[in-house]
Amino acid sequence: MNFDFPYMLGVIPQILIYLPVTLLISLLSILLATVLGIIFALLLRAGKIPAAFAHLYISFFRGTPVLVQLLIIYFGLPQIIPSMNSLSAMNAVILGLSLNTSAYLAEIFRAAIDSVDKGQLEASLASGLSMFKACSRILFPQACRNAIPATGNVYIGLIKNSSLAFTLGVSELLAAGKMVATESLKFFEAYFAVALVYWALTIIFSELQRRLEKHLGKPYAG
Image (cartoon, rainbow, N blue to C red; front, top):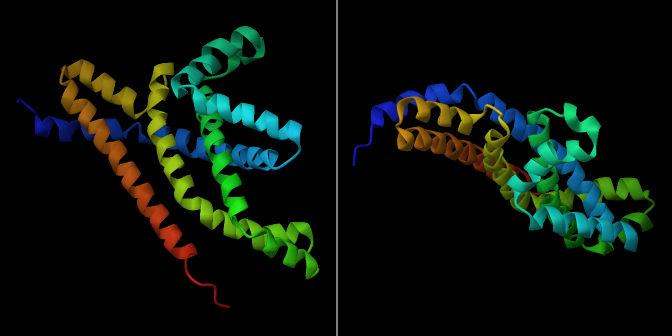
C-alpha cells in the first residue's frame, strides 16, 4: 500500500477553500426544507384533498433518488418551463435538496405534533388561550423538542447530499477533491481528504444537536 499521508494532509487546505460553498448550500437548503416540511406536515393534518397532495409529494421525493431529482430540476424542467432556463446550478441544487429533505421532515414534524397529548391543547383552549397562543406556547415547543433527534439526522444527511452539487458543475468540496485528484492522480488521498472534511462537519453538527437536545431537556424553572 502506497498511501501518501503528507500529501493527503497538504490538500485539505486546498479543499477547505470551497467549504463556504458547501455550507451555503446546506444552510439555505435546511432553512427552505424546514419551512416546506412544516407546510406539508400541516397539510397532512388538513382535509382529504390537501392530505392526498401532501402524501403524493412525500411519496415522490422519498421514493426517487436525489440525483435524479436534481437532474430533472436543472436539465428537465427548463424544457417544460422556459423561464427556468435562467436557474443557476447552485439554485437548482438548493431547490432540489430542499424539496427532497422537506418530504422527510414533513413526516417527522407530523409525528412530533401527534406525539403531544391532545388534552393539553384542549385544556389550553379551555383556559382562555387563543388557538395561536395555545399552539405557539404549548403544542409547538413540545413538538419541536420531540422532533429534534430525527430532524438532526435528516439535516446531516442533507449536508452529505450537498456533495451531489458537483454533478451540476457547482464547485464545492467534492468538486475540489476531484480537481486535486485529477492533477496529481492520487485519487485515494484526495477523496479521503474530502471524506475527512465531511466527517468533521457531521461531528460538529452532531455535537451542536446534542447540546441543543440537552438544553431543551432541562426542566423549566421560572
